[in-house]
Length: 287
Figure 1 (cartoon, rainbow, N blue to C red):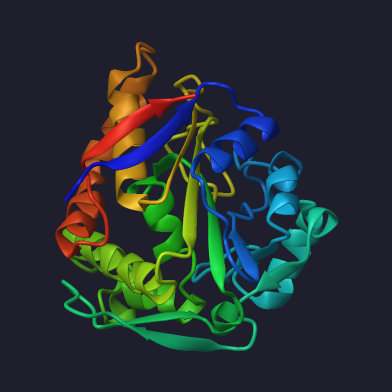
Figure 2 (cartoon, helix red, strand yellow):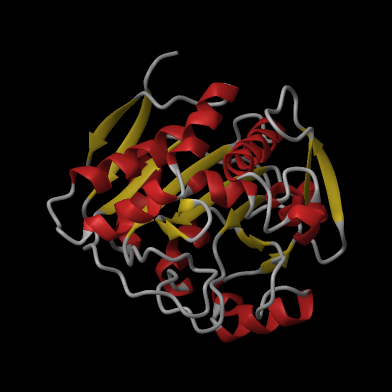
C-alpha cells in the first residue's frame, strides 16, 4: 500500500483549518455531516464551536453527534440538546443528534471482534462526513483522534456500550482491554466503508490533556500545542499525531505518553491498519 498523505501546519487558527482542508483537494459531495465532540459540561479543554465555524460554513455542514452511554449531561437527547445550546453549537450551525430516533446497523466484514456496528439512525441522511477531531489523551482508549471519533463517536448510545463490551453490552466496563480497542477499529472500518471514500479528517493537537473531552473534570494539559493535521486516511492521521507527541521537545509530553502507553492506545491504530482501510505509512507534508 502506498504512503498516505498527511498535511501539517503549526498554526492553530480557524483559517488554518480551512487551508489544510483545501490542501486535501477534495470536495465532499451532497449533504455533509460534520462530526465534532460536543464536550461534557464542565470540561475546559474541548475545542469551541466558534473555532470550527468557518470550516463548517465552508462545507455547508450540519453538526452531528450521538448520545453517550454513561452518566453526564449528554446521555439522553434532552440533556444533550441542552449541552449543545449551553456550549454554543446551535449558534454556529444546524445540529443533529443522530441517535435521537434510534439506530441503524452497519455490517462489519471480517471484523476482529464485532460483526455489527450500531450507529445513529440519522447517519443515513448524509452523503459525506467531515471529521473534526481534538487529539488528546483518553482514560480508556489511551488517546482520542479520528478513529475514536468515527467509532465510539458515531455509534449510538447502545452502540457505544456494544463496542465497549466487545459485543456484550453488559461487559461495558469489564471487557478485555485490547479486545475493546480492536472493536473500536472494527466500528471505524464500518463507517469508512459505508461512506465509500466520501470522508475527510482533521485533527487539532491543542489542549492535550491526558483526559478526554467527555470528562466533566479533566486534567489540565501538560504538553504544549503542536498544530493541525489533515488526511483522507484516519489511520495515517492518528499515527502521525502519535509520532508528533513522541517527537515533541516539550518535557510535558511524558504525561500524555504515559497515558497512551498505559492503555496501549496505539493498538487501535495497529488493528485498524490490519483491517486494511488505511495505512500507518504516511508522508508528512508541511504547509
